[in-house]
Image 1 (tube, one colour):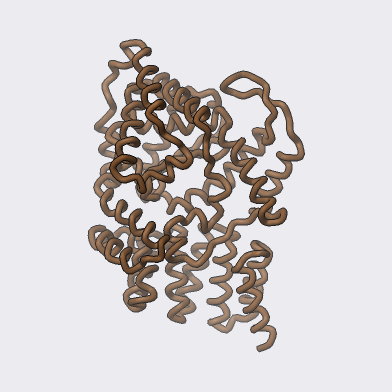
Image 2 (image 1 turned 30 degrees about the vertical axis):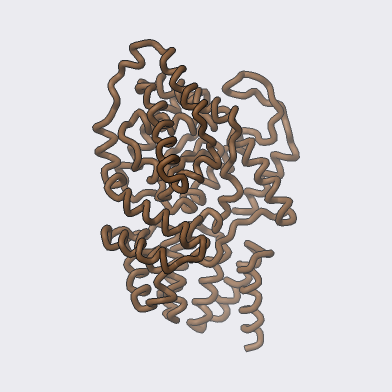
Amino acid sequence: MLRRLVHIAILALLVPACTVNPVTGKSQLDLMGEAQELEMGRQLYPRYTQSSLGEVPDDGLQTYVDRVGLRLAAVSHRPEIPWEYNAVNDPDVNAYALPGGKISITRGLLSRMETEDELAAVLGHETGHVTARHAAQHYTRAMLTQLALVGGMAYMEIQDVRYRNLYALGGMIGAQLVLARYSRDQERQSDHLGLEYMTAAGYNPEGMVDLLEILDGEHRREPGLVDRMFGSHPLTRERIEDARARVAALPEEDRARPPVRKPFLQHAAHVRETREAYDRLAQARRLLADEQPEKALPLLRQSSDEWPSDGLLRAFLAAVEADRQPRRALTDAARAARDAPKIFVVQVVAARVFLEDRRYDEALRHAETAGEILPDMADVELLRGMALEGLGRYQDAAWAFRRVREIAPDSEAAREAERHLQALSGA
């Protein structure tokens, strides 16, 4: 599948064409046609959802976010494409759009909102990036860069699931390929489009100003929590004042619409209740990135103790416990995997913890579950191979190690797989 993504990008680069921008109506040289854009979004969406720590495990919330997004998409410049909207577990304050209308908002941002109008402002803004084809343009450039960096083969791999990579799991599975850094002009255009779409969809346009004020306030209060969003979505006071002026110029009947508060607070109740626990997770991940697990551990333990059925929080705790309290890490990893069966990183953490304890059956089970969530991941195949080797299933292990080399031939995982293959051939 990963090679197909590369082929999509290469095809887009080899067949440049003039297309009409859906928003401006003007012709422009475009390196990615709509078919390639839609296919790239379709294939990247599950990987980016997992790089953002998986979907928030709340079907009601997911349906609600998607419904609000589709209401905006219906009045956008590209209502016909297959739009999808979801809420992801990333504790950082952020939202992002993939090519082809695949849009995510983090629980970190959701937990700071109070109205559906603010949610519509975020989703409308991200919808604007897609309708104006900002995302497709950036992803093509990013793929070009990645192709050059790895000698013509763009692949996604995971690294050791602890410490530095627990801070930003996007780095584990290729998120460096796509999260675009938009220009100020593109941000301003998406603000305008988002305001247009949310107003046309019946929302109070003041929600856009409220959203930008929330982001500005969070940045002033604790810059680290919103740095990622400001890296890809630069916020300035000029953007806020521009939004305020545009709203003031709208008809009074639009500005007089009552804010939609009750449904939002009902659907986002749990995300809002767990905000402090996930803020501690965000802080712990920054500490892990700085190689300070001893400071991250009490934060993770406090969050997990407050919300004992939250498998994601417990998985991060287990990963840090593994070097210090391996018995406790086993218990926590098993419980985390049971409570969060659909989250990739939870299953990978469990596989590693059990593998280190030489409990190969359990390690294999969790590695295979991770592989079902995200196929063709080099380090998952490496984990599978090591578990199979531990079980004495040498032929199956050798196949898994060879598969690692196929998926990511220039990676550390491939070099480790080669060492195992050599050991097996000498046995």
